[in-house]
Image (cartoon, rainbow, N blue to C red):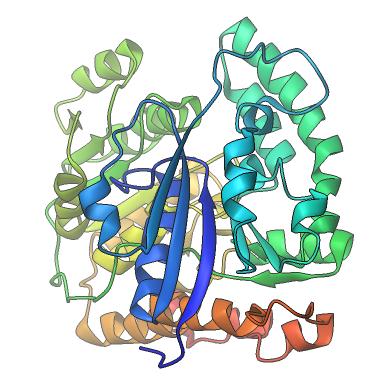
Amino acid sequence: MRKSLKRLHIVAFDVPYPADYGGVIDIYHKVQALHKEGVEVILHMYQYGRKDNKAKLKKYTKELHYYKRRTFKNPFIGSTPYIINSRNGDALLENLARDNAPILFEGLHCTYHLASPRLKNRFKVVRTHNIEHDYYKHLEKSEISYFKKYFFRIEAEKLRKYESILKHANLIAAISPNDTKYFGKKYGKAIYLPAFHSNYEMKYPGAKGQFLLYHGNLSVPENYTAAMELAKRVFSKLKVKCVIAGNNPPKELALLCDKYDNIELKTNLSTSEITTLIGKAHINVLHTDQNTGIKLKLLNALFRGKFAIVNPLMVEGSGLEPLCSIGKSMETILIKVKEHLLLEYSKSHFESRKQYLEEHFGNEMGANFLLDCIDFSGLKVRSKSSIAKGSKSLSQLSSVTSYFSL
């Protein structure tokens, strides 16, 4: 833990506990890691549908502030994106203006006050979880409902225009190398800050697993489409047991799994139950049609599981490429699955992966790197050269033994 006490405001787009989905997982474990480094965290949260969980969050924060998200607003009115306009309360600005501590805005969602004159002399960091307008374009493509498709299309265009507000940030902390390049080119002040996560130690999961696993939130079109394709074109072609796990699957997926004796659909599982499945599986098979942000479920599979077989979009530009076997098509994924079913996950493979993940994706490393990039004096804004100093070269992320090319 650092000796010098530092104070930091963090503005979260949702209550970050329980840490049970992508963005809040990153926020919660970031708060935890910063607290461990001696930072006084003042946590501001927009609340809509989740409990306040004060007892848990108080363990890692100095202050907690809750704000109601204005979800009653018409999402089609005005030029400000709905995800920002519904988080626009003045109470947040009043609380942020009470001192001179730096501010970390979690996601473009929370940046309504980023350009406020009252925060002009503050050191402001924006953590980007995605290139949001690209993410919303992908949501539009995946969505079946006409109304939702229309909303995502309008929101994507608003987000594309709104993104220029990032010029008022002193630092952009992007979640993937690809996103870092994008924001760095546009705004010139981006660092790559890997995702924070729940994996604080790695344990050898054994040499052989009991089944193949695909997991994800099955109410999300991207995920249930991937599950359907894997079931039809990969899992159904095997004799080994295959598990698809996730909450709220559509009826079509359940009916499809029922057709095959070797495919089991597990639903409404807790986070710990999903974690157990990841560790017991011989191969975690993951697929996506969106190359956006970073896939935390892949990071969890690599920390907790054995072999990981993915398609290029799941891993491209993430820094996790060396740890996965990559199949460009369902046919190639099937071939790689059959090859890996004959292999044992060795302790030497595990130790090499452990070293790589701890060096490049460890929470302590991420917290210290972020703190080194923030000016806590309240007197000056750091230059681009001082931000870049000490930053890991992106090329380092692929410099790892060819052992991982299995």
